[in-house]
Length: 320
Length: 301
Image 1 (spheres, rainbow over the protein chains, first blue to last red):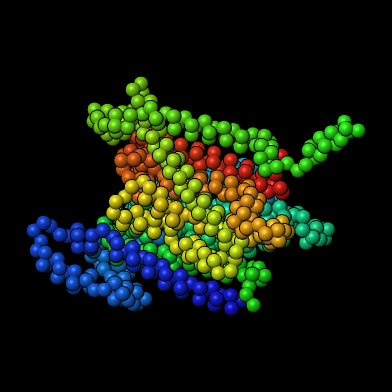
Image 2 (image 1 turned 45 degrees about the vertical axis):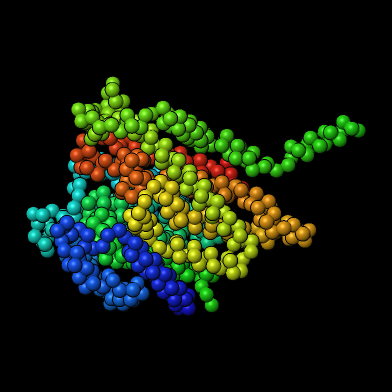
């Protein structure tokens, strides 16, 4: 067990290293440098040169890379030139927003997906099952940004059920109950969008798992002991099918990260995805590199988590 | 006697297992929704391509402020956008561009993925190990972000470059799938027999193993095509897809970034969104039917 985890962890290190090199090289190719925005035609060229020299932009690449990675390991990603603050602090604020949004999304995701999957499996080949399959098919096919826009238009603008942007109402003081409620309320529509988009794989997996379980011996044993079918479902089949579902958590995290770029932009939610798009726009490359690195790390962590849960659930894939 | 022989031969033909094409036709006959999707898709794509040929793009993209946000009516069937440009015309051109680019990306990634997958699965060893590490790496990186960064740092940004950037990141899934299938296929008896007969590796890989994987490859390409339409329109929506001179369906949807357009000018962005949704649904449905026909356990027909 520990061997598997350790091995997977060690594999992560070279992957992160190659990723950091790739990001660094990309950052070097970005048009303009961080000062481009603040330069006017009458800025003295000598002054620009001085700024570049001071920021270390004229050193050889391996020195710049060494300095960057060394600082990054200590959590220092430099300063954002547009926000005039430490990148780590800026991302920290945004990451908290993204974290809460993701948490609510994952909870909603499981609340929607598990009952639907169980129902579809239990009443397989009925009209109910077919409706659920149709639902999961549509949510599988629809692109993130289309669903997000349609939700925003319909629930936000037409029905006025939800706020259409931002993360909190300005009229509330931080720390009060109203503030927290307003925050939750702002996150609800983006979270529902996320949740609806992510349900497909869990519903389909749970459904086929339960259909398989119906013909298993342990179900027949339980049934012949006189346990009512309803209890066989809740106590026996559901429990057995639930463990593999947990393994989806890792993939869900990966999916959430990819989707956050679209969802946060559309709902103008101040999280990491939106920060990424706005930093690309302003060529704030210290923020971009830090964000790509962080997302890469989190994606790796997600797949690591999936593998660990899988190896707990299914001992055959452990490395001995 | 001769008659009897003929009859026997005829019966033999009838009882032979259905070939790939027959299975697919049967599956589509059985699944009416898939058949309908297939026909609708073909008709829609042909219409879009033919119609787009008759649209004068310069005329279409000319700004006329008097018709700003004209509502759907006699002159503009689907209304006009901020610059008074016809939405319907942009929709057709955008759909043509999106579909053409998705097809190009699907073909490039398909060919790369299939060739690399076959080679890795057949030869194994060092080549396999090396490509698998590369694929592992590509799968673990945040692709969307890196594609966006790539798009912003390329100095002379054109459509072929966009297609290449996308293809660079999207071949890995196909390669991985084909490799795993080719691996088990290359251990079969017929491959060993061919080797003993002295058939060249090239002939075995592309003449014998590849045809046996054709159904899986077709399914994978179809589903990839749907995925590529989604990714391209998504990137264009964010403003990192096609250059602004070439409208895509995503570009049309991106007009909705303006809250005024989103809330009260539905005709600007909704048709493009619906078209994307219908395209994705249709292609995916056809893909699912193909997938079922590739797997004997799931077939309906």
